[in-house]
Length: 105
Image (cartoon, rainbow, N blue to C red; front, top):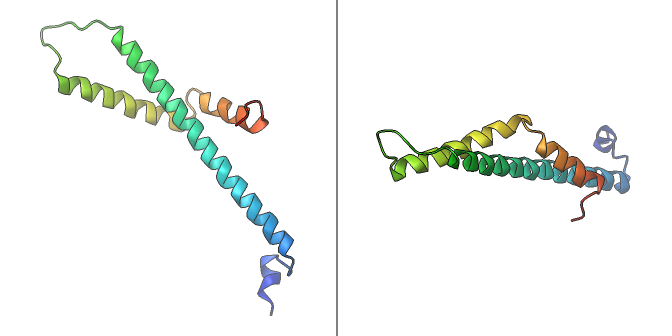
């Protein structure tokens, strides 16, 4: 029994090379999707931080450095979680632009 027939190789190295190229392309696509999602997360984080700066500090208790650091970390984590589900759609639009060749590398 020849195992190469089971694998669909049929002793033709060009088929294996094509499968390897497709696997590389799939990995590159996944990496591109992840980079686009990370960009969306950074964009959302920057936007939320700027929006937060427009709200005047007030109240009886002054904010400490620890509170400010916690709020920034919270916004970073919030934006990271929000982009996992294509919430804004920016990552999807970027990915489509890169894959269609509208943006050159």
